[in-house]
Structure formats: C-alpha cells, structure tokens
Length: 256
Ligand code: IPD
Ligand code: CA
Ligand code: CA
Ligand code: CA
Image 1 (cartoon, rainbow, N blue to C red):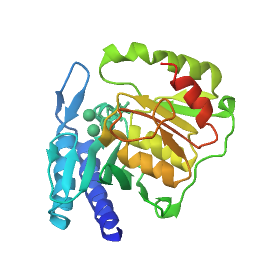
Image 2: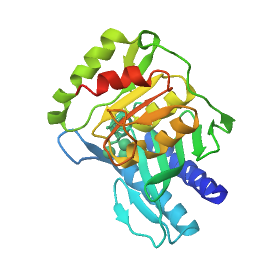
Image 3: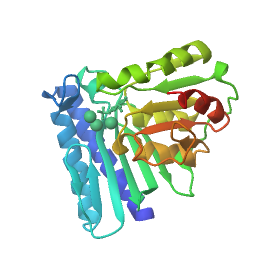
C-alpha cells in the first residue's frame, strides 16, 4: 500500500497547489442548487487528482464528486473530494481541503486530507496509524460531553435541516461548545488530532467523509452511523469521536 499512499499524497499536494493559487486569484462560481456552489477550482483540482492517480494506477476505479464514477478493472476505487469546503473557498474564507481515499470493496484502506493554506497533510493507512505532516496523531481523552468540543455540518438541501437542528440545540446546551467549520474532511481530522472531541453529520456523501473516517479510526477514535451501527461511507451519516464519548454522542444522535 506504500505506493498508493505516496501517489495519494502527491495528488493532494498537486491539487492543493492549484487550489492555493486559484484562491489568491479568484474563481468563477456556479450554482448546482439554490445554495450549493461549485467553482472552477473544484474542477481544476479534480482534474489534477484524477490525472495523477490514473497515470500511476490506470486500472483503478474512480468516484469523484464533480465527475462521478469511472469503473476500473480492479476491486480498488479512489473516492475524491477535490475541494471540501467550497462555500468557504467561494467566500474567500481560508478553511478547505483536498480529500482522497482508497477503498477495497467498500472498505477504506487509506485516506489523505490536505489543507493547502495551513500546509497540513493528514494521512492514514489501515493498521498503520494516522499522521499529520508525518508525525503520529491521536484522539483526545475527554470523557464527558460537558468538557467536549463538538463539530458538525448541515446539508445544502434546507428541507433536511429541520430534522437535525435539534441536535445542534442539544449539544449547544450540553457540550462545552459546538462548531460549524464548513469542511467535513477537516472536521474529522480535528477529531483525529484531539482538537475536536466529536463530530456528527447527516446527508453527507462518500467523498466528504471516506478519507477523514479512516484517519479518525487509525488515530484511535470510533466511527459509526447515528445509531452506533457499522460505519460505511455510503450511509450518508456519520458520528466520529475519541471513543470515550461515543455512547454519549449516540444517545443523542439516535433520537432523530
Ligand atoms: C460540504 C462540506 C461541509 C458539509 C457539507 C458538505 P463541499 O462539502 O464538507 O462542511 O457540511 O455536508 O457537502 O460541497 O464543500 O465539498
Ligand atoms: Ca465535500
Ligand atoms: Ca467538494
Ligand atoms: Ca460540493
């Protein structure tokens, strides 16, 4: 898996360079929905990542946010979010990332998340731990909700928000603080480093969470669905925590 990880890191650095330069120059913004944006940077970054991966592994499948599925001839498939945090990017707010994961029959085997502004490279390979800029990282050891910093996100489809907004209310009343940063992959990496204690979100897509989820798991954290069931990137929902808080999180998320 060493070569795959190296290629993922190379692709993330290259795409990060594209994003950094476009962030400084400004981009064209288009609407996918009423509030859901896509920019020329999303497309350029995705093109760079796919070219880099395809050159190294022409037979692997690809599942990328903007261009969809390209079938491969092997059971290996790359899950790509070329710009996670598009709304931040379009508003010139410097918090976004490139997210790349590799799955083998729906099981994530490696993940890479790169923040090109802070130059933070988060990586994980199954069974080999997680790293930030090549140094091992670990989840926090916070044990109770009232001392926890919880992070979340909301879907673009506003008709889905009413069913989950009560979770925001609950955690605002019962945690130390709640944050909405605008990049699911970075939310997960902050759980992996222990800067956040837990993250939950519903109506997410595989490219938002695939890489971040393995980074949390390999940093010693726990990842499940809203009911404590087995996590897969395809369930559209995720609860990630340092493990110690997981039950307290699930007790709340399972109510909606
Ligand atoms: C979005 C971000 C955001 C999350 C949304 C995602 P995008 O991804 O990760 O934090 O709340 O659910 O769709 O569109 O910026 O790649
Ligand atoms: Ca995303
Ligand atoms: Ca995206
Ligand atoms: Ca998007």
